[in-house]
Length: 76
Ligand SMILES: [Zn+2]
Image (cartoon, rainbow, N blue to C red; front, side):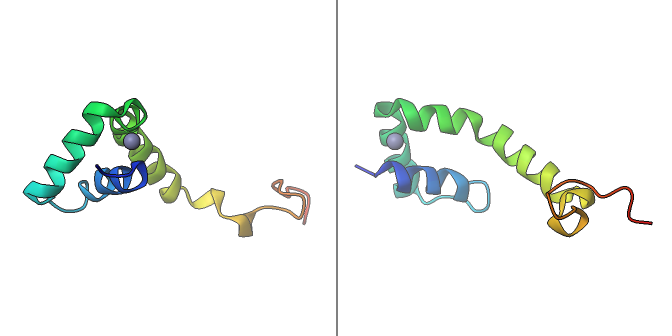
């Protein structure tokens, strides 16, 4: 059986590329028996959309933050 680490990696990869028949079968077998990975699979679309949203925000990069991690508004 797949480890949870391998199973979650396959789930992520399935968003980028089609899985082989063997990979899909192994993953289906694992998620049938593993509640944690079933939860992860259910939440994967949400996690991905949050990650994409966060990656597209230009104002969340550390270079725009002040020394204490706060936005410095009084620098002028
Ligand atoms: Zn698992």
